[in-house]
Length: 122
Image 1 (cartoon, rainbow, N blue to C red):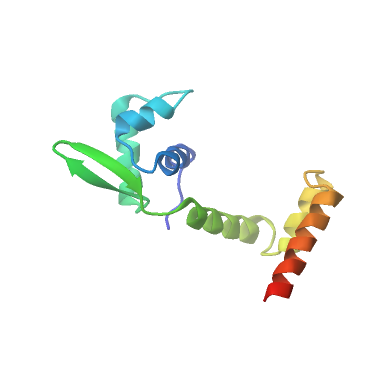
Image 2 (image 1 turned 90 degrees about the vertical axis):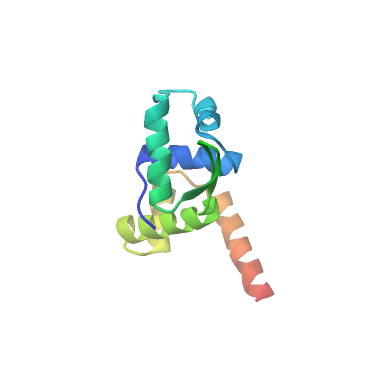
């Protein structure tokens, strides 16, 4: 799975949301810094070349749909981020967010409860 640019990722979120979309449908979802139609069309074709979307042709028009799910992308992104920024350690990642006060003790307890529930169900 090739890495996406920020703009490609933004477009993929729209495609995941819509599930099926023509370029004009994607364009309608962009509220800020709307690219030119041809630029957006090029971005979508790049996403297709990278294997993230495919299309169904209707004459000269193409309706695009995701071939990689948001969940698949999220897993890959998280694994890469944890490997790159936290030395492949989930403990380092969680402690980083705790130090930055991005996660509370109550949320950590909730996560521990979820882990314990999964262990009991296994």
